[in-house]
Length: 242
Image (cartoon, rainbow, N blue to C red; front, side, top):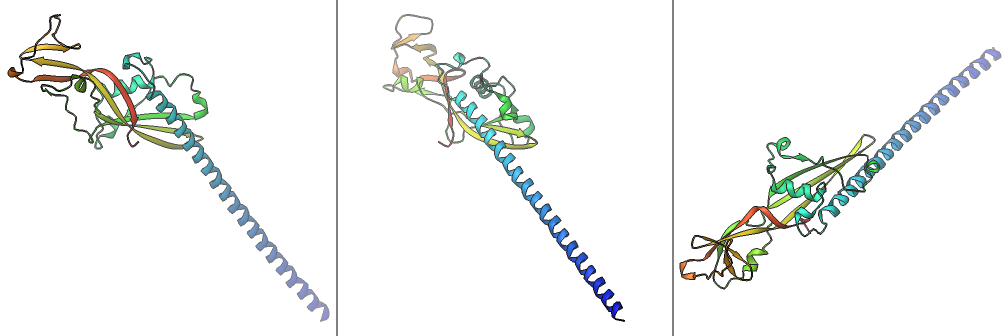
């Protein structure tokens, strides 16, 4: 009888040990699983941060190209980002329409800035869209009145467009987009007309293709002028919110 009780006691102890071992194993597996999740999330955050930094860094490369000092747009390298944006704003590309984004958001596919090692940026995608500048009342024509400075008209910077450049960097399947909004400031060639005659300013008025001085008879009206939207003399880009 004594032996039976001893055997029962040993069996109970064994069951308890097995249960405790199972609990410890389950706890260890849970801790291992939790640690794995935390590590995966940490790695994910690192990949997201890296994608963000790469997208931001590449956007700065494009911004440096945009802010290069060119006397005239045609002096910019043919395949430069500056020239591409210039053509994008003044060309046939339509303005952004939120109802038709696929048709009014455009992909930048030209050559990337010279000397840029794109491999370190992962997979880069650049898209752009433009909108009419609502902050400036853009008028491409008007009247020059007597005693008004001609240079005021010739050097008038016009911000016709606000445009957005969005850079997306994809690294290891993790992507992040970085957007920058810019304002275009352009000066245009100006066409002047008075009393039905085309006139030009060269430190004095002359009829178009004629050397003699043109004397403005202000009794016959003010001088009409019109900015030639297809003939930009200078074009600069600045962050829209600076």
